[in-house]
Length: 140
Image (cartoon, rainbow, N blue to C red; front, side):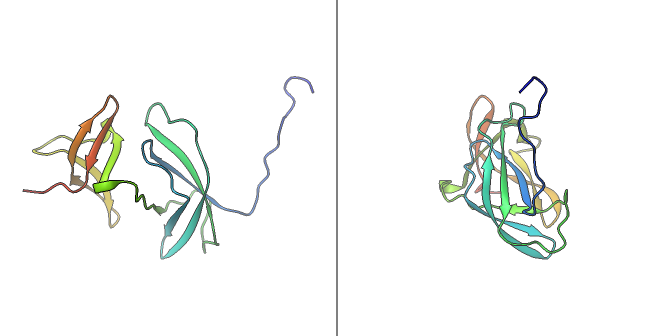
């Protein structure tokens, strides 16, 4: 085989996949759930990147749909729900740049009912590029 010769050829299959960028400290669970318009579809982990993205400190994870999603099209946006029972006391590791420290308390942006809103968090620990936060912050 000479240089410039293809080594593999990718095939287009019927199984749809969902791509999610998860915080690097969060382990991608085997199972997740896709919420797409008015339907919920179970997902199984297909693959995950071995290294974090150096700019966002996220890990790209691919989930395969366990069943057909009616009306789903390539490039469509949806919501993926994951359960991470290993996070005791609701502790999460996020990129430090995700903290919004304007105002009296640290906050993060979340999507609630289709709207971007800030939610107060308690910063438990600061690392070089990450913050360990708890979503159980008490509002005063």
